[in-house]
Amino acid sequence: MLLALLREPIIVNRIDTAADSQFNLIRQFLLLSLIAICLASVVSAALMSRFLTDRLLQRDAELTRDFVQNVVEIELGKGYSLDGPQASKGLVEFLKHVAAMPDVARANVYGKDSTLLWSSENLLGLGNKYGDNPELTEALKGHLELESGEVGLEGKAKAEHFHLGKSRMRFVEMYIPLRDAGTHAVIGVVEVYRIPTALSEAIDEGTMLTWMISFGVGLFLYLVLFWIVRRADRLIRSQQERLIESETMGALGEMASAVAHGIRNPLSSIRSSAELWQDAPNAVGVESADDIISEVHRIEQWIRELVTYSQLPDYRLEAVDPRPLIDQCLAGFAREIKRRQVNIELSLPDGLPSIQANASPLMQVLNNLICNALEAMPAEGGTIVISGSTRPGHGQVDIDISDTGVGIAPEDMQRIYQPFFTTKAKGLGVGLTLVRRIVKRFGGRVHIESTRGRGTVITLHFLSA
Image (tube, rainbow, N blue to C red; front, side, top):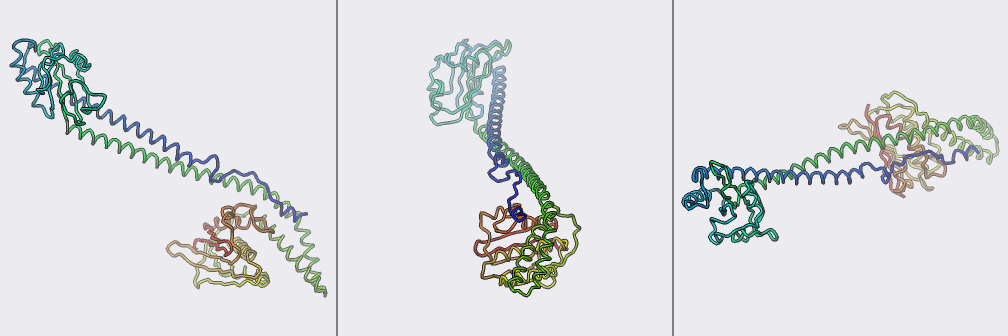
């Protein structure tokens, strides 16, 4: 009944830490934060580009307005009217200055009644009224109006764009109120079409720089947040693993104490009786006694693993020479090695450095791995190779234990360190878990490679003493 209890699976409350868990912090972050940061970068870049363009165009229009107003005060003087008979001479001098402005493609002058009085474009009909022009209407009220776009853009063409050009040129259109130098009353409007090549290039460069900075800042922010979330995710997973291990060890400790207390005394009696039976002259009785002692030894090994796993003691690290410990372990398995017809190849170089460890738990690690290698062998036997090597630049000593056994299935590789997971008919599934815990306490790590049907290689990485 006690053996059946040992072989029953132990059910422990577990927290799901699989990659497809519902709470996957990194996966959710990758999607949601990418969308949010990209959206914020695009919106901010668009707003900044628009603001930069509007401010540059507005400032350019204000400078042009000031220039035109200064020319009005100098050339036309006070009390000048564009409707008077004396307007022609002063107006011609004024328009020469306007036409000489940089990047001017066309200049028009309108009277207070929206009549076209003068234009640098001969094809436009003088005397025509453009009362359907809202910008002109606002300029006659004293407001500086500004519009920019492309000439000939479908759906946005205006009557005064006629003969300006059919190509998709970028233009800036300004409606500048003309004010009397004395009364500051609006006496007309100057409409200036400019093809501001230099200004357009500056706007394009500023826009490109704005987009580059926005996306650069967004990328930097994304990477920083990703680094923070990745660390947080690892910390959460680490805490989950520790919680699982604590829950497992709590259940295991209770079971181990109960089993150890209830089974050790009967086992001692069984072993004593079997040893007396070995002295009997009956060969069948001797063989039966050997089997009983072997099974008792196996049960004791299970108990030791359970107690050690649930109550792994703290110990001080010291310099340990692995060679004599390996020899001692192989001597303990000599009978089993011979029975299974296994060939042992030992390849430990002379001068192999000592490692940071503790002899007693290190013996348990080696015993577990050698036992697993023996149990993995097929019926016809096989080979176990134990080798050692150093990494001088890393201060590391590696011990490899390889076998030619059945190997580990790929689907089981992710679960080999899971407590109570085993593919053996007679096993508890705490051996490799115990090995990893002990080696990690030494400051080392365990690496396992296995091919189904070809064998397994387990590498123990230790720090050199």
